[in-house]
Length: 191
Image (cartoon, rainbow, N blue to C red; front, side):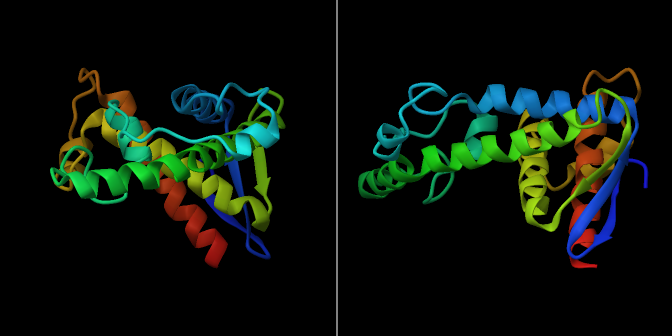
């Protein structure tokens, strides 16, 4: 079970992680929190004010953030039509803050579970109710790494053949590992 999920029954899953795997996954999730950023006005924001807060109307300039928060109507910057751009901006304004909050919650869910290991390796049991949070958090990490690596559909074979001296190798290994984790979590949830 090392590094991959298995069914824990009832739609739940379990994963055995050694100390290094748990540390890497936790570090990636903390970096995800830093990338996503705090909620509107910071984490101590008034919940009522947050309810009425409006998000940005433009797509993020960072390719990883643009991948996590894509335009509702096509690729970022690809919509030359002013009406389509306006509609995409309106959609983003009312949805991005909630999407950011969900992504933060997903990452925090994983971090808390990993913190339960006490800085050591062990088995993390993920209840059925939290499997979707884990799946979302793993997907967000993979999307971010894919954007940083500029992954396209033809890169899979190239990634498996990277020499150890290639500076992308650690990120590629993490990208592929996260993909395996995602697949095994889906199988555990449905199996």
